[in-house]
Length: 120
Image (tube, rainbow, N blue to C red; front, side, top):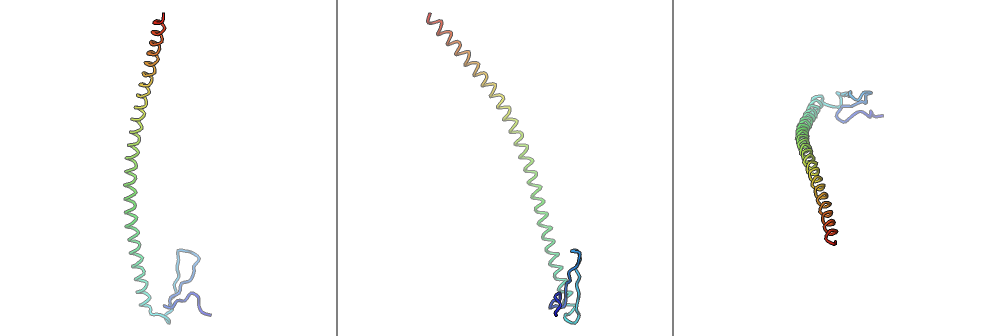
């Protein structure tokens, strides 16, 4: 029966209880150690390049998030100021409405009394 963990290159990985550990068994009869080491070295270089790309992308995204936070805080301040002005405008216009209603009542009362007095 063939070893299920053996690869063509002479390396085999066996499952380990902990996910942080990887055990490699090198079979010197089926592979050249120098080739295996150079292959592992090139894979490590590729992983390093990927990690550096991830770091660069993470920094760019963090900068973008910081810019968005600044923009959102400025927009929040603008909305707050706009709401204050809108509330002031509503209060002032409600005072104007009260004045118009009082003027209307006084005017119609005057017109009513004038029409009653002019009939006699």
